[in-house]
Structure formats: structure tokens, C-alpha cells
Image (cartoon, rainbow, N blue to C red):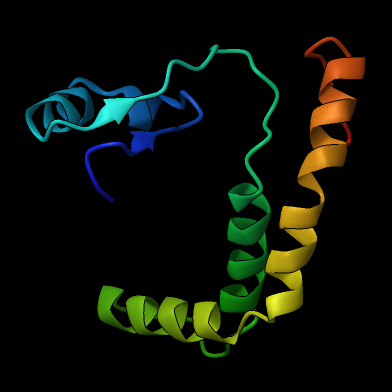
Length: 108
């Protein structure tokens, strides 16, 4: 990612665990300050949801981690480009809605 990259997460407990903090600090990763109760403007959450639905629709479900890993990779590769484009194009509206709600609830 390079020395100018900045890591952003959503302040979920697993992302803020001491072991994660220690790893990021030792690795020299710059972390963006992000308010704990900020609205979720990160469209990756929508992608995770889509990927979850695709994987869960596979029958039989994966029984071992390696099979799950392979399934996740295959489904990620199969996600249509239009999903990514739509999410990127929604960022302006997401930000406006967040500003209009003064940082409160948005429909995203």
C-alpha cells in the first residue's frame, strides 16, 4: 500500500483489540482516527453482505476452512462489476445524507 496509506476500520471490538493495535503499530501502519459512533459510510459492508449471501446459497455448505476459503474466493471473483460501480457512485449521496442527518441514522 505504501508509506502514505492510512488504515480505516469501523471501531468494532475485534479491530481495536490490543493484539491488533500492537500489530499495526509494529508494522508502521497509520490508522485513521474515526469516531466510535460514526455512521457507516464504508461501502465494503455492502460487499461483505453480498458475498455472505452468495456463499450461504452454495449447497452443500463448506465443512472445512479450506473449502470456505475457496468458496469465498470464487464468489468474490464472480461479483459483477456493476455492484462495485454502484457502491462507488453512491458515496456522494451517502455523504450528503450523513451531513443532512448531522451524523445520525442514514438508510445506508
